[in-house]
Amino acid sequence: MMKHPSSIFEAIVHQLMLEEPAPSHEALVRWQKRYPEWRDSLAEYFADWTMDRELSATDADPEIDEKPIIDKGVKHAMDILRQEKGFVPKTSVEKLKPFDQLVLAAVFRFRGSGDDITILKKVTELSGEDVFISESLNRLERKGLIESRPANPETESENKDRRYFMATMAGERALAYAKATSQTIAGLLEDMT
Amino acid sequence: MSVLVEPLTMLRPDGRPYERLPHVETQLGRMLLLPQPERLAEMPDAYSETVAYFIRRRKHADEQLFEVVFREVCKRITGAGRRHVRGLPKIAAQEIVDKVEIQILELLVKNSADPAGDFFEVGFAQGVEGRTRNAKRGYKRSTMGGRRGWIVTDETDEVGDEIERPIELVADDAPGPDDMTIAIKNEELRRELFEGVKPRVKPMYLEAAILFYVENWPIRSKDPDTASLERRYGLTESQIRYRIDVVEKAMRAWLVERAEARRACAAKGNML
Image (cartoon, rainbow over all chains, first blue to last red):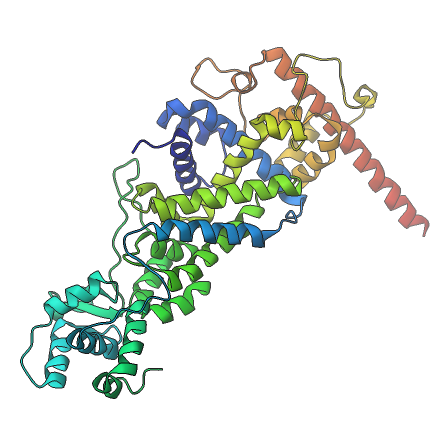
């Protein structure tokens, strides 16, 4: 998608604010050489920046009603999220198959420190049989009930090929439902509030 | 214990990628290890760059989580933005802050993959400041801003006979160019000086003088691509010099008044 010219200039301005500590003429000339097509806009921007620095020190922050601006922003951002494929409403509770409940409960128990091997061991122990959990983990992650991260090669070098899993808020909601409906899960998650 | 955080993709002019500040990187590495409810609880104390990261790099948009995160980021945009709309009437200030907030949310939420969003993970406050100043510029140029009288513009651009005050009355023994140079080099005195003359000269005259004295903008440049006051205002050299001269006289007058006020104050002290 083509970017609107104003958003290109806003990105340039952000970049220059990161790189320049003050609005000197020397810096302006440098930026005009870098972005000749924005020469006049840059000159205006630098002039305004100078004026802000020289004249705004004595002015107090304006009295503005922040709440309506913040509320509007939150609504706008939530409206964007609602259009997204992976949006998870806060009232939604995923009802899972018993095996996925067990895997999710095991992930939850380790609170982020469980990798695929430790979770497999836990689920095997709980179910009393040899199991495969990779499909279940993928399914739970696709539904947004767990999230995963690769091992940190610096601090987890012994497990560098493993992935670590953690329950998300949606996952915890699904577990709370599972706990209320399954004695096995309730036993496993006695300490879950 | 921390997690490796994915690097930024936006490149510097020398080809190296931008990097987050070390304290942001450390915080992210730690917070990524936290379960979401704990992460959420830490959000109000997190760096704004960290909050921007969690918005842009979301995999699933959980309503419960993001309502809190968005409220936090909006508070920060509004709080930072208001510092850069000083001197504007309330209604203009609100509209500018509102516009900047929506722009930033569009970039971070709707266009999360846009590499320009990387800058918000490097320096959040700078992004708000830059965008707010830019939006302010838009207002100055808009007919709406002018019509409402939010920004006082210089209606007569020609070399005019309008002088804000009878500055010709500055005494011959008033501070000269050297005193002016000394005053301008002293940051504190300079600000006082500019504030003092602000009500006495046209805003655009003052701007030309500030750019000339403080930032060393040349009045004219042989290189047409180099910023100069002639180019900025579309005026001739003599018109620019006239404007600077008007401000210079106003500054000298202000310095005289200030010196006299101090002398009077000291004399009053001696009498007591």
